[in-house]
Length: 484
Ligand code: 5GP
Ligand code: MG
Image (cartoon, rainbow, N blue to C red; front, side):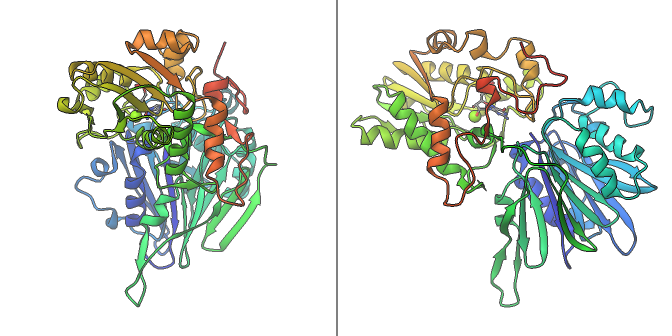
């Protein structure tokens, strides 16, 4: 998963806005990041791209030193293509002699075919080239009359998931795949236009009005699946580059990826997760003394779980500090290397033994993928003297790889998806991770929880989700990926 943001400001410099937005989206990726801005007067595109999180990328350089009122930013969590500087984004290309920049969230599944089709030997392509660089290469190669025409030529060839932001010659182009796998939202701050992966970005980008009242940007609408939206020096323009298909929004965005304060399709993420926790209590209760959330991704579900358990007459209470989360490491998973992930896991959690000793514990987390996290936690609980350890997970067994944005394909190939290796059998998985019991939330209730908290007018229904990691259904096909 990645985060993207685009800004078209009327009078302010775009660099600082983009920098802050990217920093707020760091949970979506921090392997690399970057900003490209266009200076209308100079006709020049300035950029700064590097490895690490935004603070590392901009060490010793100020985002305010980038000149231009229009620009894009990207934070990366690698999918296709290695985690390296040459695959860092925004990717830079040239179209008809003009430099352009491209930021992508999602993952294409026909990258190999696209590379062959292009049969182009140039600096864009090599063996571990990212899908995004292939797209930039295709645009660079296009003989279309305008950048927009080039996009209309290239976009229909792409299979898989994408939210794209392009910056070329003073215009910003936003394109979304026809299924709408990942969030892409348009916000407004006065006359400034902001595009971002997550709506909470709008809350953070504010201006002081003449009356000194702070006014934040506001959500205006979602970029539609299949839409091409253009903003820049000639104003704004929107068209459909493709017929939209039935919306297939990645359900894992609600389960895990989105920040709790974001709202997508009328669903505030925190509330959906709490509701998942409530259903989890109904489907998978257990006798215990305390309920311990795995912060921070399991916090909301745990809150809902504890609340519903009390309503149902269970006496257990929530003990959020039972599993202590030092403030030093962010999202561990975003680390691409298994060894480093395990090292981080040791740093990520600790326990306060006095809160656990001699108690029966229910640990609540949002998901188990490879099982690294939960194994570590269970070990800590036992060390802390827990008598029984029950685990409750606020989504179904993660059985199949994600191929549209959050690469678990390598884990799939290496038999590391623990639920798949044990055929989704909760009792067997419980045994393998060494817990007294394990309960998952049903897919039906996972969806129901999201729909329960939607605002009136939300277009979501039971059929609006991409849930391939639970069902092996891949609406945009599997392309280069082989899933047996
Ligand atoms: P595991 O350690 O089982 O591989 O991963 C499970 C933990 O990582 C859970 O605590 C969950 O919050 C988080 N997680 C699950 N899926 C993903 C994912 O696709 N990306 C990231 N960054 N974290 C995930
Ligand atoms: Mg987690």
